[in-house]
Amino acid sequence: MTADDVRAVHPRSRLVVLAGPTAVGKGTVAADVRARHPEVWISVSATTRPPRPGEEDGVHYWFVDDAEFDRMVAGDELLEWAVVHRAARYGTPRRPVEEALAAGRPAMLEIDLQGARQVRRTMPEALFVFLKPPSWDELVRRLVGRGTETAAERERRLTTAREELAAEAEFDVTIVNHEVHAAAEELVALMVLDQESFPSDPH
Image (cartoon, rainbow, N blue to C red; front, side, top):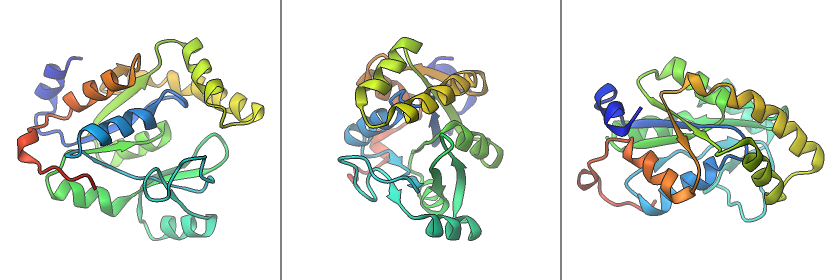
């Protein structure tokens, strides 16, 4: 499906849900969109996992403990949430998404496959984009190369990634992440943006 095809199917698409297998580069692509397209609002997920080196609370994730995550779930404050890699929990705070859409801003959720499936049930009008690696070998190289997981964690993530890759057919469109900036620009092109209609806001 091309960008023109997507515009025809989703002429008023303002919410894009980006998902894909672990280590495919979802966060890196989202960061490129954030840096080059401040008119796009990007959700910040909450997670119970500890920060990795260089990650900032409120920028990359909201880092919360299990008790706070439990409180958010009980209060229906999350649009979606899931246990990822059989370990930490991740979720999308509901209110910021609703406020961005109410304000008419193009918005993006960068989430895992389980979360994307939940959002499809509650917001089926969104555009669901699958970010795919150029090859399985490249996905393994990226996961090993970033050096942020133990050997056991890497194996667990690769097992999850095999399952996640099989879900590509569930999505409206696929972007192959050969190069980060190109993938980010392809993603933005799908958002049906009239960039002059949205004020630049780096926050």
